Length: 136
Length: 136
DNA sequence: TTCCTTGCAAATCGTTTGCATAATG
DNA sequence: CATTATGCAAACGATTTGCAAGGAA
Image (cartoon, rainbow over all chains, first blue to last red; front, top):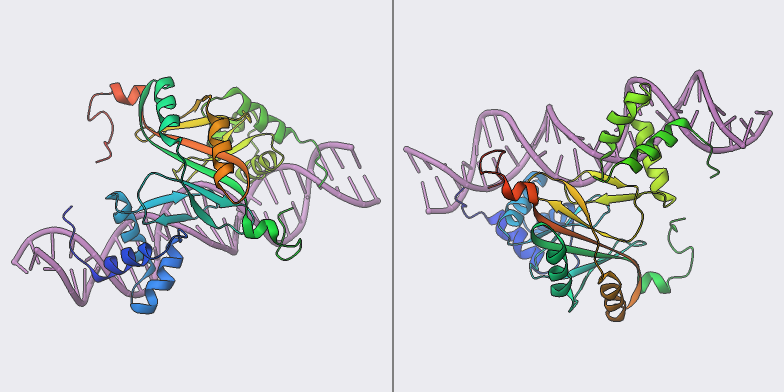
């Protein structure tokens, strides 16, 4: 239960804080590896899970089958591009409102909410057709 | 591309329509099997994917690592119990509002939205501590 | 010294896929 | 007949886990 310091966890967490694009475990691994070559994928997974469990980071299941991680634990939404798969933050004012509304209607205890938007990001919108494999 | 009739797909789809609890592929398999014992898991997966791609059902990634399926394709939210894992529908009035708001703020094309709420369902709220493994 | 962490590799588990055969249109 | 769907089993990919060794308190 008690958590002890580890250089690996420290590197993982601080790497995540430098990124606003919500990397996957493997991306974290590839990057931390540059500074700490001996680190293993298992360790990355273990620490991401530990940090998420302690609420120090957020685990995002954006719907592409791979977990993404976000060092920003504040309440915010995400946009996921269905073409390039990029994930970006989206700040909305009405988050509290929807939560209140849901609590009013639901017979149980609602603790948190997660909202994803899907569509095409700016870059993919402007991209000429055929520049990447189009999703039919 | 052309879709041909199959008894298996028919059974899968109509089973899904009888359920409002958003079963997983395996649950669909176990149930359809009672009426059609020779069906294979692969066929169930193939048809759920086909139906979802054609918009006849909805694939839900509720965050437990397993895909759930919903025969109700109307716009609505879901509540996921973090204790028992049950998934229930939640109808909210402000869905259009949040979508409009997001479109206003985002520089790209937002096509759809998905919102999940997490907490304890009514049954788990009333359940005495220790009746199931508590998530520490 | 005690307990937490690691690296490594093997194991898990949900889902997908290749292939030869069966069913549909 | 051409094409799509099936059952089966093997393949896959992301994540987890067991274990012996290393590091922190």
